[in-house]
Image 1 (tube, rainbow, N blue to C red):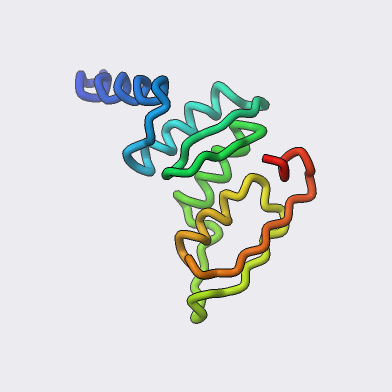
Image 2: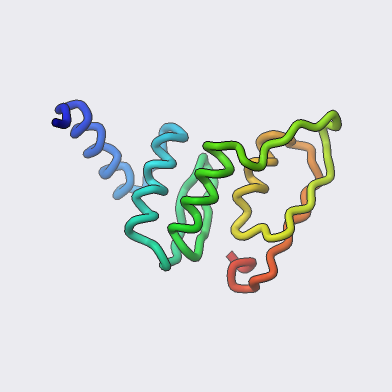
Length: 121
């Protein structure tokens, strides 16, 4: 049985989502993306993620990328150079680039996306 606190928290999340407020934390941002995954699969739109607006073509694909990159750290790596050269072939909507910008602010990053419709996003 859900507690009153949990139900209130969910109601506040829905309210902030409806009002398009910035998520207060990464878990809340990921919850929004999970919500989007169920309601926007195959649909495009925009999402506010950690202060940056992300345009996407498919809600499910965006959820999977944000979960892998930001939550599980799949693309994280260690580098002795504080300003590495990174080439992202298959950049999609740039989620990995955002993560690398957080990790290596001075990195030189080239992002390539072959699908022109997604690259335009």
